[in-house]
Length: 200
Image (cartoon, rainbow, N blue to C red; front, side, top):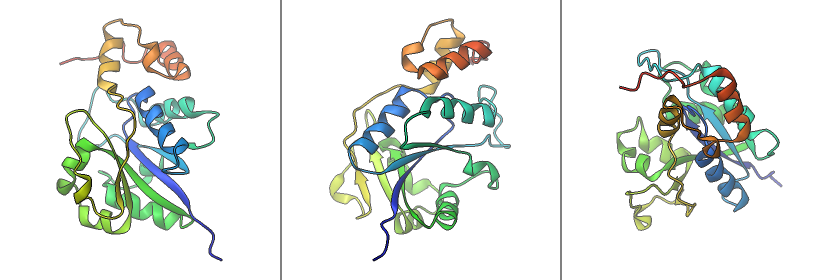
């Protein structure tokens, strides 16, 4: 009998920084049976789009590792670091499937990204070859009747926290410890990260 593949959620992002919204969403998906595990896929800096507020790739990966330590269903991944830039989701998913044939990958995206999905690179190929889980975002309706068979809308709690809000708050001297995993907050505080942002 063929062994059942692990259902692995791919949650990609800059995670600049990772916050409780990311963690709560991924935790909900694992604990409510949508997937078996979540890989937080840290997106590397695009060499063509220099962003002054984007932390070094390895430091953002370190923050993710600190946030997920001790929870067996979460994994921090630097898989995209070795891919050609800019990294497209379709390429990443195809290469992940080649590298890990024992896993059934599910792309995790917000309703805002689903609304613009037709403007992604090769959206038809992504839908044809991979599963997609869409979580709710404020102001974006998902028509569940029009979703392809391997695309599923998931009724996760609506947690509207943004990394931009956290970075700007820290740069203004505000204490945002309750928006971050304690380990992440401690690293940011110790290293003085985001304290001198160019908020333009």
